Each structure stands twice: as C-alpha cells, then as structure tokens.
Image (cartoon, rainbow, N blue to C red):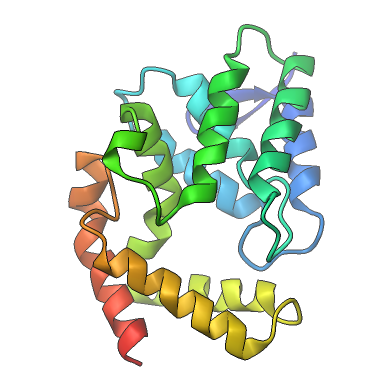
Length: 198
C-alpha cells in the first residue's frame, strides 16, 4: 500500500487524500490542511506519547470539518475521522481519536484534570500557535478574523475574540504539558498582552 509521510507518521495515501479533500472545503484562511500538518509535526516531537498513532490521527482530522461560528465542527470532524480511518487502517482506538478531537471544542475551558498526558500534549500542539513568534501569531490572528468576516458582525467578533484571548491570558495554564509550557508559555502571554493592549 502506498503511503505519504508527514514526519514521522506514515499514512495510507487514500486516507491522507480523504483528509486533505475535507480540509479544502470550504476555503479557509487558517483551519486548512497546512494547520493539520503543523499540529502533526509538533505531535512528532513528543516521543513519550503512549498512543502516538491515535494522537496523530486526531491531529490529522481535528479540523477536517470547519465552518466559522458553528458549534458542531469538532463533532462532525470526529464523525468523519471514525468513518474514514477504518477504511484504511486497522487496530485504531477510534474512541480515543474521537475523544481527542472533541477536546479541541473546549480550548480555553480545559483544566489539567480533564487531560491525561497524551491529551495534554495533543491540545498543546493545537494551541502552539498562540506561543508562536509575533509575526506568525499576528498572521494567525488575522486569518481567524478573515474566517469570521461576513459570518458575524465585526463588533460581535471583536468582542468575543478579545474575551477568548483574555481568558487564555488570565488562565493559570495555557499549556498543560511541561514540555510545551516551557517552550511556549512566555511568548504566548507576550502575544496575548500585546494584542489585548492594542
């Protein structure tokens, strides 16, 4: 069976193709296939994962269905994952994949008690962009705004976005794993303070 590699995970080419097609619709400014690949590349840096394959598959599908402003994106992405994966792979803990994807619906509301070590690393990988260098963070922030343009009134978007970012800044932990807390927390808080003070 042919495979395509996203370091260091090998996926059957039809599985990767199915995910890629899902991410292509609708056109997205941030939640596109490049974002999934970025999360996968970060997952690949965590050698201590107990369930690396399920974590990688959750990363691959976690935003496969995305319409800005909808509350069921994560559930629909999880459904797509558990429907698609068995067509290409066997022995996958699909409940685990679903659980990880559904955690991404609770960014900003999660606590350490909600997460085992694999889940902590997974949600931290998805949130790594908050702790990116300033130019990369700003591009992400602008892309999120672009996805919501025309979906909700600008004033409503700005109010809700600031509330979400302030909640992150005020949280005791933005990143739950020691690895990513050490790597990203200081820059994340600097990014958030800069945006909220502007």
